[in-house]
Length: 116
Image 1 (cartoon, rainbow, N blue to C red):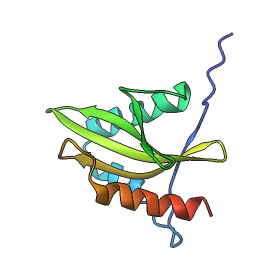
Image 2 (image 1 turned 90 degrees about the vertical axis):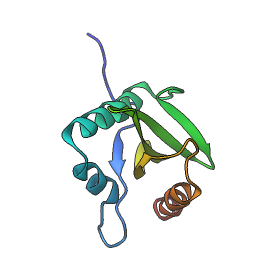
Image 3 (image 1 turned 60 degrees about the vertical axis):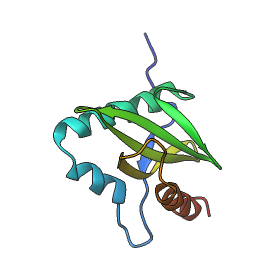
């Protein structure tokens, strides 16, 4: 029998007020985009450690799930590792070649909250 256990199960970041921004962002996307992003997150959950093209380090404990969507669009989900889980900190549709510092900064701020 083949063992197919998640190596690092995904969990959504929850703010101190109970907000779930990554889940909210995902639910605003079209179903096809949600499916692609979900499958890419799942590849990381089952295949960790995983490198490019599926996953890449951003430095300082942050990683990104790299998602190629339809119509030549790209999405990223930034996460950190905590207690054996991948904590999904921030998701966005990428509009430039380089990941914006504001998106990395937001993810870094949320990571500080979950690693206290």
